[in-house]
Image 1 (cartoon, rainbow, N blue to C red):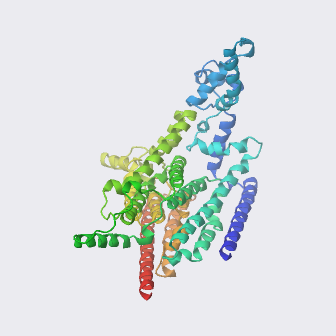
Image 2 (image 1 turned 90 degrees about the vertical axis):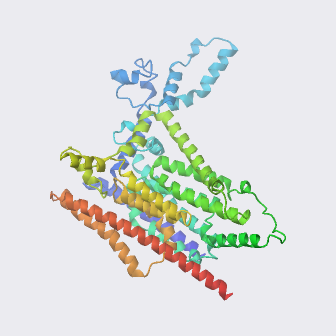
Image 3 (image 1 turned 60 degrees about the vertical axis):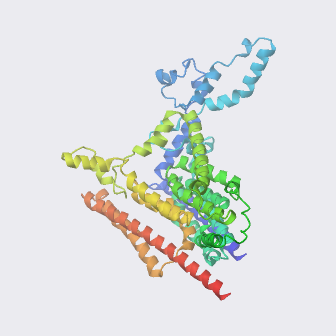
Length: 560
């Protein structure tokens, strides 16, 4: 009851904080030269407005200027229209254009059926025909589903100013609820083994580090959509852990040792009656919840569709599912040395399902919004280059490589560092290594460290990108054991100090007009080193916690 009252208190405080920030933001936007609302929020809403108003039927099938779909691009009077470029809206406009008129319908049962079918399907074709193109907004580089989510706010005058922010703030609150959900799943399954999962921190960390933390609250209320991504990631992890429990938290080493003992017993007792045959075959082993397993794959696909970076969790998921499968084969089938396919079968199934869902999502959006969707929401992010100063170590090579100045060697070096594809190499090598090393032991911790490494190596990133791994902190915080408060203080000092160093150099460049590009780049290198050190420190703190918990468990067992 006490935990529930604390959680309700945190929820009320979190909602109140976000409402207060929304009110403050509205006031600042109206009275200050420095707006509270993030510039991306205007981009989202411009895209939503284009979907609602970009392609009125009166200007297409209801106009004499429109005869064929090509007229939308060739007739000057229709050049201001922003219709969706996919095949589905084009077919819908074609059907409406050649819909039979009542006076043309002859009295026969065939024409009556055709006329009735047109009458029934007319609203659907009309809805598809008027869909606008969010990519008519020059800097809209997101999934069209995001703009589609904000369209209800544009159906009523002046509502759009608040509708999206309320949605993002609600997703922010939903993230905290899912944090508690994941921690409750772990507490229910493992608290008897790891008492830390039943500690009061399970309640307080999501409340303190997320709900009443002004950093994520102000990001969502300024109009950032990242809270939606966090909601999808935490939801897919919650479902995946429900379908495939973290066996490494139970008996990662113990079940392997027991399997080796069983194997040795069988080999030493060949003449004695053999032990009972295993009850199950490898093909009989499944997940705890098939619907949750399917839903987890679908939500991961949706998360990658909305924001590409969650694809990095694939390696950790494969390692987690392999460990789950290996444990099941040892315990339920008595197989201590399973075949590789038997171990990875579940991971292959999950990868295939997630890939199918992702392809279907992209195909559906392509059918409606066409090539602009592929160019802006997918291909752009692989070739993106940003020469404006940001935390990334790649900003200066990108900036210097713009004019092509310098000698041959310097130019080749700049071109290599400036290539958006070169930056993926250290990023994905380190991310994959972390997933392989940690994924089978602790899926949440692996996703957390992978995201820290991914952001640190990213070719473009700002303070807002820190939110991508902040939603893991309240969950993994329960499983960290630092050497003392000084250790936590040192970690925070390095994390904040390297950012402050960079921000000081950026201030000199941006506001004082000083040539601090080189100093700013060295600050980016220091920030990268600080992030790497912080990631390593967190992994050591996590390993220290696991060792302590195992030692406490062994001691408790011996005392009995």
